[in-house]
Structure formats: structure tokens, C-alpha cells
Image (cartoon, rainbow, N blue to C red; front, side, top):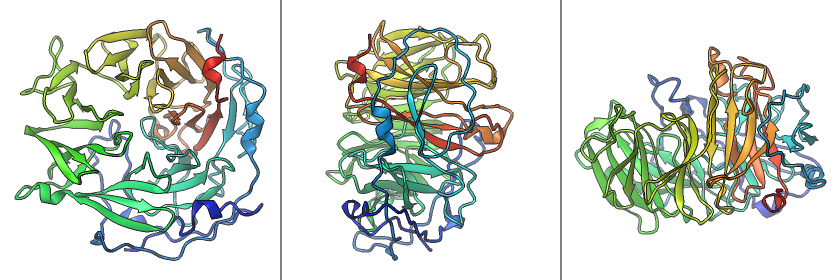
Length: 484
């Protein structure tokens, strides 16, 4: 199988020139991973990339692209003056703007947020990539590497690219990988899933490595995949991984917790009968395994024998608790005291709420107004673990006219009762639920580790086109200290 590599050069040596020259290797399109919106296309199943029998002692390499970057810093414009940080909930109509040019910063006239279009769908895609746009992958997935110097960006055909987070130049295309996740410790390392294996790819030397083969953990069983199902991530120290095993019908047969440090599955819980599980993940400190099942019936909660809704397990997959009957979009996060929580849309009460994963207590933050909701939705990002107590929400609807204060906005939320809501920017993406391609136009805003950068996707009003770009909101390092 032919693979393309990002780089055989060290990250230190690639920022060397005012020119930007990227040479692409031909991608392996026939083995591309189907990164599909599972909530919109439940009948479609993932197609995993063949692994080519890569072992611990073997790795695939091919010549690296020649990469030269500009030393220009297009985000310096955003550092001063400070934005006004609007905390009211008044309704404001979107500013009418033509699609911004790449790498030219501008300010949101309503809220003062500084925004830069990072990607250029006309130039950044490799010649063989049929994608019509580029986006940050998802609100729950960290797009920045561990030191914030690189950004992973997804093409709509499940291709992926790496950008320099300062110059915003594309460095090259990554090889085809399933469920790629940046290491939280090594800025050059990406973990990914290969059917029944956990793999890694080092962008500094272009090497793939087998981390663990899960087929050995399921002898005499028909298991076709071990993964998070798109939305999960490892603990902050890279050590603990929440994964689920699926059979030939793509039903979950078991949960496992893998300890990367010990290189073994340290806990397992079989699911009998096999069930339809939306996704699994482990919390920041690796204390809780979260699994989202189908909704529980009204008036009921999930139990060990009849799991439904949000099920929470300890790291050893014991003490199962059904804590939510019904949960919308969500993300794990840290509250101001550093406690592990779930930041979510409560679909029973129509509130943005917090769930304390230790006590099970719920804190409502503010109500969600669905009065004029037409194909609307919201996504949560709790990835700013270096700034505990803050989360990110992006909200979209199918109406170009703003009728509710949340419409088409991205905002920071203080994760405590009575906390502040900070309006950051308008995303200008028009999402029509009747247009299939508009799933990719959902902003899916995600935040970096210290909440100084926010990424989001926008079609800039081109509903149904699939022509999306990724944008970045730049926040000053001390923004949370200067809010009035």
C-alpha cells in the first residue's frame, strides 16, 4: 500500500525561509478512512485502513517533502488592542462580510474578536485530494500538538494536513490514519487506530510504530475494531485509553481500558447482549470511563445490567452509574477546582449544564432558547485543561437571520453557577439540515490547551457547497483576567 509522509525533517529545521514550497506524496485514496457524521448517517460503517503488517521493528518510510516556511507572524496583529469581551445576551445581527482572504487577520465588529482564515482550499490541498474544503476535525478533538506549534486539519475526504500554528502555512499531508490523536506529551507524535491495533506516527522521522495489538486480548472472538468511535481521546499523560470492541455488526461487545505505560489492557467489561454505543472516552486524569448509549426511557436511568444514556465507570470499569438519561452534545472538562466534569446540552431541561462525575450532581448554567430553532445545534469543547473552569460552545442554525442571542455564535463559558458567558465571534456558516454537505459546515469549534486559540469551520454562507475553511480566533493570554 502506498503512503504519503509529512516530514523526515525535524520541526526545528523547517522554519528556514520566506518562501513556502510544499511537495506532496500521492495519497492512498482507496484506503482513506470514512470520517462520517454518525448521527446523520447511522447506516454507514467505517472502513479501516490496511495495516500492511507494520510491526514494532518495522516502519514505512519514503522521501520527505521539501518544506520551507515564512517567518512572518500573521497573528501578531491580534495581540493588541484587547477585545471588549461582550458578556451580554442581546441579539445582534451578523456583520455582512465577504469571505476573508487567507492569513489576513480581521476583527469581528460586534465583539472585537480577532479572526484569521487559516486554510486555503484552492491551494493547500494535495493535487490528488478530491476534498472541497478543509476544517478542524471536531469540537471534542484537540487539533493542536502538545506544545501548540502545529495544527492538524482535516480535508472533507478524510485526508489530513499539518499546519504551522504561527505562520499558518501548510507543511504537508499526513499519511492515511484512522482516528488520529496528537500525543499530549510529544509534539512530534500522533497516535492512531488500525482496526485491532494502536499505532503511532512520528512526524520528525516519518516512522510508523505498532504500540499494541488488541487481537491478542480477544482470543477466539470475532472483533473487527477496537476504537473510541471518532470522539474519544486519551488521558492527559497519554497513559490511559478508553476503547470499545465491536463485532461484525458494529455492535459493541466489550469496553476496555488500555494502559500505555504498562502496555496492557488493565480492565475489561463485556457488554451482553452487544449494544449500540455512540462513543467512549476517558477523562483528563484517567479516573472515569464515559460511554454514551441510546437514550433511557423516561423516568429511568442506566444500570449495570441495562446500560443506557450516559454510563460512567471507574478506570477499572467497575461501579457503573447511569448519570444522565439523555445527553446531547457534550465534552469532558475541568471545573475551576480541577474536578473532572461533563459539560453538556441537557436535552430534558434545555439547559447548558455541568455534571460532576464524582458526585453525580448537576449544575444548570443557562437555558437554551429553541423558539426559532430550524436545524439548529451546538457543540462543546472542554479541551482547555491548562485553564480549568472554562469551556467553549459553538451554536448554529439553518436561518440566515439572527433571532436568538446564541445564533451562529462562538462563546466561552465559565464552568460554574452564575459564571460569565463571553461572546467571541460570529462564525458566518450557514447550515441547512436539508443539505447533506452542510454537516461539514457545522462550526465544531474547538479550543487549544490554554484557551488562547479557538478553531472553527465556516462555509461563509455557501450552504450545500462543501466549500468550507478553517478559521482561528486569537485571544490574549490574560483574557480571562481582564473580563469586567
